[in-house]
Length: 68
Image 1: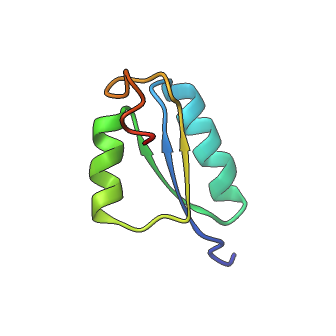
Image 2: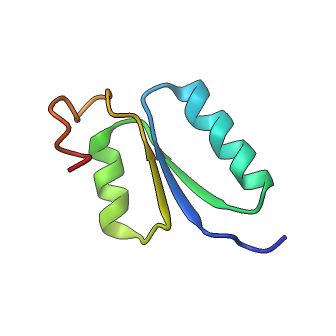
């Protein structure tokens, strides 16, 4: 299957994060997952992504600083 792009999923709910990643991987996307804004920021600094799916109410993002 062709690689359609790379997605970062940042969410503190493990079940949501893993199920969305599994679904997208089956469709041909590369997915990385982060349990909080701190890990997500590290991943964003170390790799290029085509899309970010992020929970706005998660650890490390209390005043939406990660989203900004």
